[in-house]
Length: 341
View 1 (cartoon, rainbow, N blue to C red):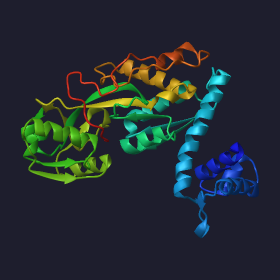
View 2: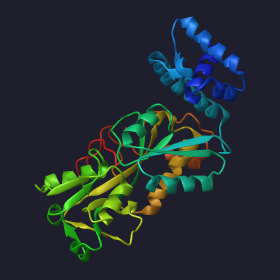
View 3: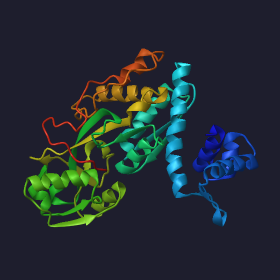
View 4: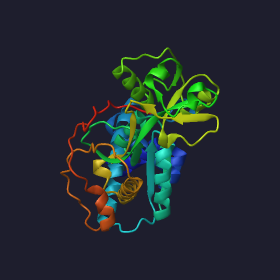
């Protein structure tokens, strides 16, 4: 197989067109087009639909793109391993998150310590972020929950209580705490089905054999805040995600142990990348400095050797957690099913 042809295909698929791909590869557009055409003709396949002046991956092209993403990610990892990277003077770090509240402080800490690499942040639901990790479009993700998957390296970051979000004009706002019984008598403002906050609240209500009188469903965290402030009902958020709002009161939910967990996650095989290891080390430091209870360690046992002894000791520390079951831990509470915030 011609590696140059594969590289040309990967560049076109990544950039979404031949002109941008040629610029990325530092070749002419006809050269890039010829390489892709030669690859197609060699195997009798069509990798791109070129109709309507657009370049769209075909079914076989999409499948090949998934392979080349892994291929060239492995190439980059091999280059770092062989070079014995000691200083983070360049490169990129692609971060994914299901919300900005925990990811942005970690990115700020990373860029202060390592100003060389270019950092990008993608925000989406947990499912899309995990897909990005598996397809190596994302290097590391900050998520509220992760599946028990042996392919993933999981670092517990923090655990925060979930509290009720109440308009200050509401009678309940004058209390020091509310109960689930108080809340179900009100209209609840909840995120879409499957969101982490909603799952936690629904699980607590089910355990207490309670059902809300009415529910209004809102698709974004910001819209929930505005809906509560407008008096549409009572919402919920974790303490860490409430940035303060003079229109609202944030009250503990008495008698209900509702907590939101956060993890930093990467593919186990990619944690040896210098930028990933540096980010993990800073996340571990942030978790230690924050204090308080941490979520259960949900990493699978680590049996892969550290193949890069040239990395500094402070980066190697991030890749040596204690062993834990491959399935979600059950320390004091049933582990939740995969969910998104």
